[in-house]
Structures are given as C-alpha cells and as structure tokens.
Length: 282
Image (cartoon, rainbow, N blue to C red; front, side, top):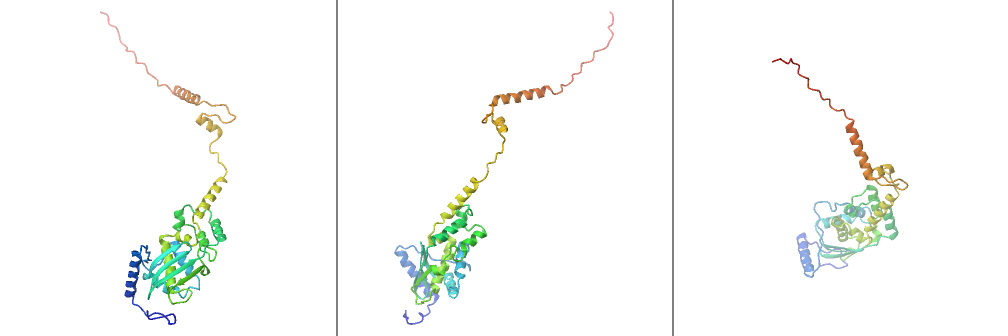
C-alpha cells in the first residue's frame, strides 16, 4: 500500500477505484457463501424511524464522538459500509476506504437492573409487538427509552471499538460509519437493538398484558339488569325467588292483548230505513 504503522495515512485512492475494490471483495465473499448485507442510504436522512433516529441521536449526544461523526456520516452515505452484520452484543462490518477495513464493535449487555426498571416503568404502555417495533407509543415512554445512561441505548463506555485501519483514535471514521449504519439498519429491523443489548423485547409486551389484566380485575362488577328484570325476561328463578314460568308470562301477555282489543270501541251499524208507501187495493 505504500504506508506502514509509522507513517501518517495511506495515499488517497479515487472513489471509482475504491468502489471497484469493494465490488471485488463482495464478489469473493458471496462466492464463499457469505450473505453480504451492505448499507444503502436513500436521500440525506440516515435514519427515519423512531428507533433508528434515537440510535443516531444517542451517538451525537456524547462529546466523545462529536469530532469523528461527520466523516462517518459521509462514509455511510456514499455506500462505504459494504457489509454490516449484527449479532447478540456484537457488530461486524467491512468498510471501503483506501483499503477494505474490518470493524468489530462490542456492545455491553444492558444491566439487568436497568432493564427491569424499564420494563416496570413501561408497564401497560404497549398494546402489541407491532406498536413497540414501529415506535408508536407516548412521548413519556420515548423519554424513558432514550434516557442517557438509564435507557436502552448504550453509553460510550459500553461500546468497545476495533478497526483494522491505521487510525488509533477511539473512534475512527470507518467505525463511525458503521455505527451510523446500525441506525439505518434499525429502520428495517428494529428488534436488532434489543439483540445488541441482549434483552428480550417480549418482556415489555408481557408486562403490559399483566398490567392490563390486573387493572381489569380490580374494576367493580356492574349489575346492568335488576334481578326482577332477569326473572321476567328469561322466565327463570334466581336464588330465594319463586320460579316464574315462561309460558305463563306469554299467556298473561296474550290475555292482556285480547282484553285490550275487546275494549276497543265497536263500530256503529246503522239500520236501513223502512220504505214508506200505501198499499193499493185491487
């Protein structure tokens, strides 16, 4: 390459040459049977969903990263992240630069106490898994999820980065591009965030279901029909009550109907007037 560990950086490589090298690398990986998952960004926005934007906002909220993130944004937008794989607590990626660099990032497991607090605080807030993954919940829940050092997203101390490039900074531009690539990937598959933090997002739904069941069981019973009405309506006897026969009720109704008809005013029939005349003698 024309550089070593004592030199500053490798010589500049034109974009077209980088892309050609990246294409050859991807072709070799596919030939080896590896499923390559590049990051494609459409437009200026890297992430559009709640989870994707919250991931990127979390990165940008820490001063540890502010000087390195701009170059990372440029790299991820121009398609330099040619492969991004997310696993439980780990991120593996290939980034095209002056060379093809391998980036490995470890994300610490979310502390159990913090996860338990989140689950309890969010009890009753999610109606379904779809709502959770689509980020369709209230602003207070969003605040709880994104609290620095208390929410779901990692603090810089919980992120360990290794890159094969000669930049020995804590966060190089290649790793920054990968972290932004995670935000874009969460747009497509938000459950990967819970995989990275090694927690089960189903816990939030289970807790919400239990919370709803307890709330319903605590409601007082409502008697919408009186006992007398039930007896008359269904022809049944409640406890401590004389049975009411359904056919007797029907007979009573029929009798009342007949009686009502008989009481109606009968129409008056006028008699035909007799003809008046004189009988003639023969």
